[in-house]
Image (cartoon, rainbow over all chains, first blue to last red; front, side, top):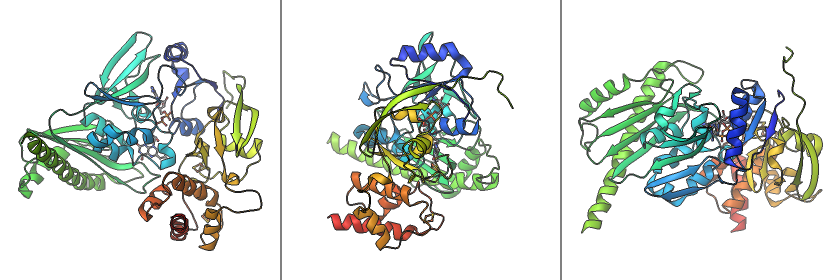
Length: 294
Length: 164
Ligand SMILES: Cc1cc2nc3c(=O)[nH]c(=O)nc-3n(C[C@H](O)[C@H](O)[C@H](O)COP(=O)(O)OP(=O)(O)OC[C@H]3O[C@@H](n4cnc5c(N)ncnc54)[C@H](O)[C@@H]3O)c2cc1C
Ligand code: FES
Ligand code: FES
């Protein structure tokens, strides 16, 4: 491996100072499940690696407060998916986080790392975009908040500025009933990235949102406000017509994992699967609400 | 190609417990845990194969959680407890899980087995009575080129059932 310096700052401000001082020569290190691969392959060649795992004022943890789930940068995915509020209120996030690599990977990998790595195939990103999650960035100029969907700008590209790091990821908890589901296709579970993936949300007013991963350089967000897809007894031909339009917004490519044609075909299958599950979840929530009203 | 800006090797003194033995060692920033275990601690049970987190041959436990030791820097385990396959039983003896692998004919060339054992051990510590789906999921990060997966699943399940 190309030599680099390793630093273990004890506070958020020290980490920001180090990142600001070294700019492009510095790399934050969370779980290292992407970074260490890059270091080994020489695709990233930092002169200094800044480990974010021992910041006294940014301990690993998940909290549910003020209508949002807040996940700090050093929180590993297995801790995220074990959190009771995440399990009960954000099932699609659990579905996505649970398929990131193997359990060994998930014992190290973080949500912030999955976002910052900005792979088009990142599994949690479509869900975070669909749930309108944001990242809170800390940097030399202070902190700023950005929707995940805007923060991820393209293949391996984010809006991270010199000296900045993602301190927390904040995911708003839906206030009205909203069904959400994640679906993905991969060549081998536990080892390979997604060939394509999708998160679908169906809100109580009939809006259906799809966010596709590995279907373009950045997540593709498409909405259907006609109500066609949300209807439980939707006519198959009408659904297909809407899906044709929706999938027309994706621009999948041919690579080692699949051809462009196969990706498109699978995007349709996964869209229907995710839609079906999201509708079921919405129906369950609406039923629970009606019973609560009685 | 020579580096126009060579960096002096950055070394760190870390204290780490490997299979119950606590030691202070000096490691370079770029040394991965797997190399430290094999070269410094002479614990060569953990294998290197893909070196990018895909095969699981290097699986060890850090503070009770299974990890790919090829993707963890040695400096990151400062203060931690690491368990390798050598730590599963006293030298010269086998753990129940190891014995079950032999009894079920789950070991062919053996290269993947240390990692498989650590993954199975990690699962059983968290969930003493897994079903076959949970066993498959827990071992999904470990590849076996001899492909004796079903015998391994049976071995793990036999230990789970015996424990009940
Ligand atoms: C075998 C294998 C299988 C995988 N399978 C999947 C999969 O199925 N799905 C999937 O989505 N991913 C997968 N991955 C990729 C990886 O595990 C995830 O992207 C993971 O979430 C990255 O998190 P990390 O904490 O390990 O990030 P790191 O490797 O520590 O960092 C990743 C990048 O983000 C930067 N970074 C990290 N944290 C911050 C922060 N807080 N602020 C600013 N920058 C930061 C780092 O500098 C680096 O550039 C796989 C990886 C491997 C090795
Ligand atoms: S050598 Fe570590 S996962 Fe393959
Ligand atoms: S026994 Fe040969 S690789 Fe698994």
